[in-house]
Length: 179
Image 1 (cartoon, helix red, strand yellow):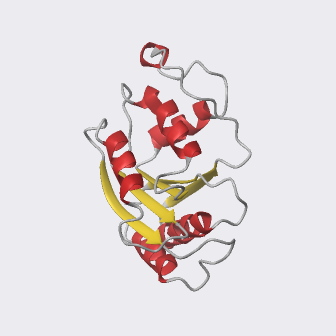
Image 2 (cartoon, rainbow, N blue to C red; image 1 turned 180 degrees about the vertical axis):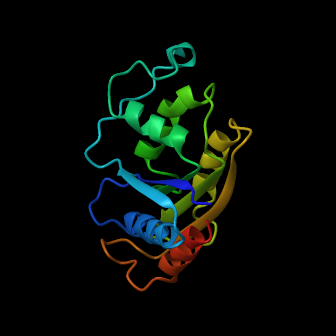
């Protein structure tokens, strides 16, 4: 049965290495017959969460910006794949801000069950994405029906397009294709 897959590219750099991973995952998920949508945070306006918790009673954030539509897309998706560059051994700030702004999903009847994380960094140590994985896992832990289903890491990539030929692209495609 086809799944509704949402791929969220959080890099603000056009043609980024993490976006290349997002596109590979997307291609694999499409090849497997899933309904796939990609959202990029580039060009989006997403303010910081105010911690007012109005979203818990309103069912959506009260800050009028692009996070409202993205959170609704997240709520409706069966699968969410986040793609982020690793900055200082952590997810990008814009990804963290989006996760905070998706607080309205906590009390909702969300559809997502599988969450994936696709990361790229200049450093190539196997432990480089650990803090980003930990940060995302902290968010996922608030959603008892969801779990981290997989991760892909591309190390030793800095400049735009450096993932070309990187084995992580095939790994991301294969992961998407297994949905």
